[in-house]
Structure formats: C-alpha cells, structure tokens
Length: 228
Image (cartoon, rainbow, N blue to C red; front, side, top):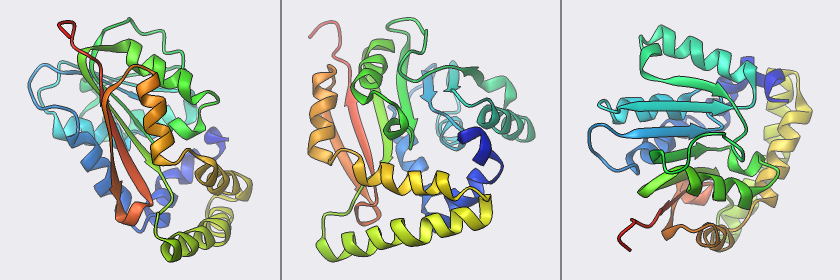
C-alpha cells in the first residue's frame, strides 16, 4: 500500500494536515536531547520528513539511520537527501520497525513519526525501540490522535471519515489507502493506554504532548541509565 501511494504521499500529508505536519515534526525532533555526537534512528521513516527535521535540528549528529519496509518510500527519501546535499549524513535501510536487526544499546535517540499505528504489533515495536536505545536514551513517537473535546472530536471524525478518503482518492487514485488511514487513527490507543504500553515496554518518564487541539500527539520516554 505504501509503495502505491508513495508518489503523492507528501502532498497529501501537507494538504490533509493544512501544513501543520511541518511543525509537528520539528517539535518531535526537538524532543531528542541536545548535544554533539548523537546517534539517532528514525523508524518507519517513509519519505524522510521527520529524518530531515532531525538532521536540521541536530547538525552535529555522529550517525543517523532511517528504516522503512517500503522501498518506494525509501527511494523518495534518498532523492530528498540527495537534493539537499544530505546523502552523506544519513544511512537508509529497508527493515521492519518491530525487528530492526540493529544492535542492542546502540542509539541515543529513536523516533517514529506516524508509523507505529501501522505496525501489526505495537507492544513488540515499543520493546524493539527500547532494546536498541542506549541506557539513558530517548524515544520520541509522533502519532495521530483523537481530540478529547466532544465537539472538536465529532468535527474531526467527520473530516477523517468523509474528506480524507475523498481527497486521497482524487489525488492519489487510491481511496482504499486513505480509508485505511481514518480507520487506523480511530482504532489507535487513547493516550493513557499508549503511555501504559510504553511503561510496560520498559520506558521511564513516559509523557504525552497534545498538538493542534489533540489531532496529533508526541509521546516521549527514556531508557533507564545503567546506574539506576
């Protein structure tokens, strides 16, 4: 599915979010601690917009890796990096976010933007994120969510159920993919349940930051330092 919609993926992301996705990704990138020499991996990197935000925010990173299962998405990411002269700053690999084959305790930061709800086993993906983090490292998860306010939630659901599949069908010629989008958002865990899953996976200090009236959220957690 993601290979099919790759050519119009960025356009629809920006259109359907009214351009707010740029700000959401910048805010997510800022949640990774500052400092030179960081190692960061972006799971389900897609066309690389969050990866680019990480590279812009953390200009002195030692090593940045982007993983995705869709080769079509990765090809677009490679082209973006090449056009911006950043190809040498990031390594791209085709891999599953729940089974990265990366070494344990190897990254200061692990991110995933709008991807964890698409994984077949969310708890397994969280455990994998925790496994590849260094002790004291930070995980940042950017994901769609549903507003808590009843009226705003109702309006948002109408938008998801009616406008999103229609626009997706018109622009990408793949209405099925964008009907999947609204269903996956509606079925995703509420914030309290997702934070509980993060804690069960081993994360300390799990927290959430609602964005744009709650239509998206940033979840953050850290792996305990060895000394704790």
